[in-house]
Image (cartoon, rainbow, N blue to C red; front, side, top):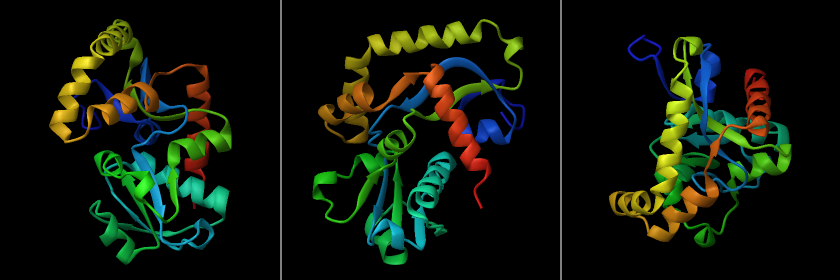
Length: 210
């Protein structure tokens, strides 16, 4: 999209802001509590974290971790980009950020050190949902039919969740129960007024990060 090869796409909100894109649909990826796929795990108490190992796969989640640590716990850790391997990350840094499948592969009940679900932490702190990605483009007015088309696609997908859960569980090596919970309880797909407020608040914090 930045290079002009695509007119619209599902874009992390930090990149929407950075590149001056416009939201073209109310389809999004958000959460209203535990997101389950973004974990901050620490070998120390949160107030003592000085270094943070991160997966560069999600700049939005990295900035969210920085916002939470800075404003909730008063620390500004140095970042070290690493492959998402928890033991190795914690060998090199005080805390580790796991995103996506790497986080879903972790069973929180088996972690004996501090673990934070960043979706839950954001919602508990702000009282607002956390939005991770939206459909965005350069010129929303150029594509008046795109929003309704994407919204129709969302409804179709929600109607086919049983099939999607089965396919994704097998493809990714997770239990159908975990994938079902993730897609029906953890992830929220509608960009409503509260989601827009949460997105704006996140971007306000992200712009002020030191």
